[in-house]
Length: 475
Image (cartoon, rainbow, N blue to C red; front, side, top):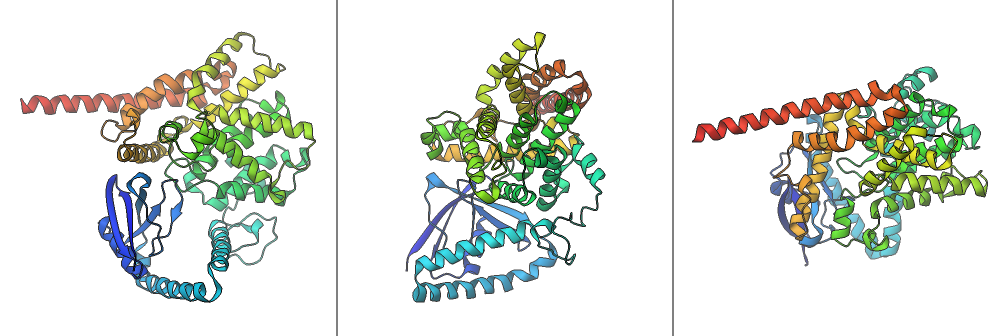
């Protein structure tokens, strides 16, 4: 019998678990549940260092402290608690069956079968309400092109809904977000202008959603949020009358793909840890280059290639534009891009190619970091998710002996302090500069951000005063 040793983080705390390969699935889960001090009502989710979801079972791959896993607890519905014993029993039976198949059919066949099952399972779980995939949970048979009844929106209502800058993406299921993304592409006339077949667009959107990882912030909901903001800005600024249809396709598709396969660890971590991405891209925007590569690898599949009916010239224009827009989201480039945009402001020319390219980068950047332009009830939960991802990174940096990013250290960063600096030095200057070109954006992006700055400044001030009172009382 062999012993597997697994190193993992739970609530920022390093833990270690040991189990033999003859343990049952229930015993292994009980081991991790005890380490996490979790109740039977909690669901355990394990993630690899690259953000990939892992199955908690005796077949788990061992690791070392340098490639630590992350264990998360999710509160489960009380009605499901009674099912855990039955599911564990089922998993034991499946494990036994897997061993028999391995003996009789060999490992290669088993691996192939498992890949096919996992792929089909993910598709079923992701689109259970999505009528255009032909999969229905409770609504019976419908036309494939018909919108899911769960949305209950007319075509006009869909368009008005998705153009709202305050759209709260947390209200939507994944299938519904996919449908709204389809509305955006349709509403901007991309399907007719570029001869995109509806099923190809749907396949493309689904594949994009599958290539966002289950991490706290840079996930598919963030992708949807950024794309919806870009879509809203296009309408608010009337860019349809100023840009070509190709420009608009570049901007919306870049927003959709801008964080594909994000691992939850930023470029500084990639470079300091000398990851495969950093080595592949020579420390130059490793994540952003990777996002671009994944986007075009998806479109390399004929069934997902929304650009397949374009001329070579237009394909190159769109590819080059998307690469520029996505690379612009690397904050290392922030000051250079903003300075360049400022220099063009006095005589901005919408017919000038260079001017347009810089504006497209600015629009991409604004959309990417636009959460604070939304109501606090929408923005603040996103900040919590971002800080969780930051803290996960700093915990890993400490374990690996890497330099710890100061703004990510859970022992040094507070929510108010993180936002006052970011809003004051990054958001407001960027948003204000764009508003000079489009004054109509003042009420939509600048004023809400000013209100957010006041909110977090007041919180920070109150925190300092409370600390001062506590120190005085101890003297």
